[in-house]
Image (spheres, protein in one colour):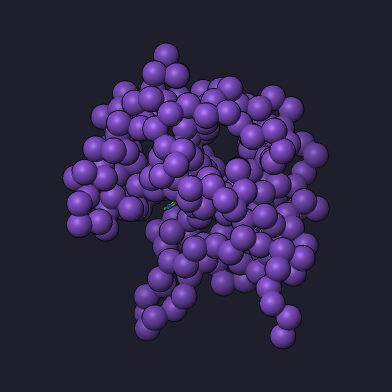
Length: 218
Ligand code: URA
Ligand code: SF4
């Protein structure tokens, strides 16, 4: 079998409606077959939040709980993110929360479904949905939560450790949008602060980074 590459997937483009409103995107994403992930997931999980939100928070993909609920960041990572946003002074009504990939990728182990990070090809296939959400919401800033989100925006050489905690520019050469965000803030994925041995330190770092975004929101 040939190695998997981005060309294995048709990409989401032909499922994205011309009418780029959040209700239209929510409906249309359920039909998407832009990559193989629609097959095993329960449903697609589109972003949620205010259509006029100042800040878009970008995670990786829905987890086990999100896949069942149909809403992003409702499981343990989402609870931690909510707490970190509150501690950083970012109001929920200022945020729209979404993921780079809209279907849950997992491996079965017995009865459990174990999270598996999406491949580069799956992230690229799903990017048209993210572009459409950026068009619908037109956020002033984007908060990147972890490496997969960073790679979805900046390409595969992106490293959270090199970019986190300061305002950076939206890249000119990816995810074409009519009105690009004015700033981007990268930080760790909240689930990293759930698992780690030094999770208090990781959590404090997450909040410190988010405070930089809070300052940009004003
Ligand atoms: N992790 C993510 O990246 N996104 C979610 O929606 C939940 C967990
Ligand atoms: Fe479509 Fe994205 Fe789901 Fe793949 S992960 S089927 S591109 S919505």
